[in-house]
Image (tube, rainbow, N blue to C red):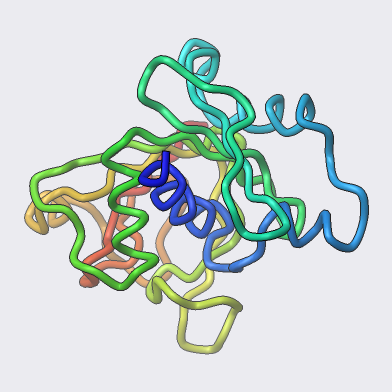
Length: 190
């Protein structure tokens, strides 16, 4: 469980698209959503069959991860973060959780572990060039994403077939954080 907690902590940061805020922070200033509401929000991230079998987790006010529902299919879903400007529930496989943890800890991503993430409700605005940007700046190419899926952890050559522009057309597949160890493929689904 400790490994899941550590890995899921990294997923929260991905889900908030670098805003570094959590459901718990929003709840600290007002009464937060019920567990039932959090589960419903998290399940919007993935196709119904994936969401139905996924573990659902949320961040508590003390920064610890709490499991709302244990799953059976190897995916972990997290609810929308109400402190971010757009919807951002997400659902990811085990390799994606490991990738996210490496990113959060500024460590080398796991080799040979390609991961897949769903964000079918969309994603909060984020820098397309700086994995650690927390707000729009003149040089960090802030982009808005709609419903999408992501491929993370692939070899660098995999991403060479896709656009790597700082200001991409987000209606087409593109590479986010190109040239960094955390580059990943964004694939719109709408």
